[in-house]
Length: 139
Image 1 (tube, rainbow, N blue to C red):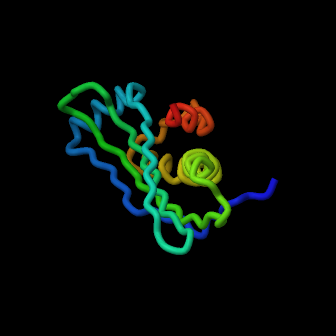
Image 2: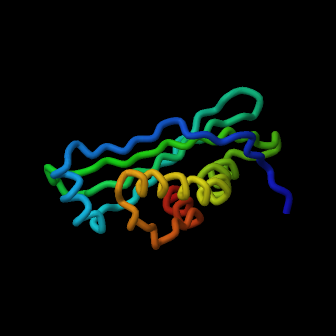
């Protein structure tokens, strides 16, 4: 099946790793297994069938601890969609198809950020199922 979109470029729009002090770092190092990966996908139409897709990953502690670190990346993809793409197809392209293409690289960049921030043991064992993500958003 022919793809009805093309990713023209990808880049890191914003990346952040914040650990306020040594005490926070030591606390987080012992508790990082409690952190959760969250994803947010937003899109903004540009001109000439181009769409800016922003994929934001946050790795954060859901509990309200005083001592915590903050990790976040916003990764942008500029996507050109074919003119015959219908509106209902577009959502699947942006939430699922584009994400399946960019996510391996995005995950690698984000893990490098975490590892270089002093947390080399962090791994994401559960892969994100973007088909499921799309189906949940479509309900």
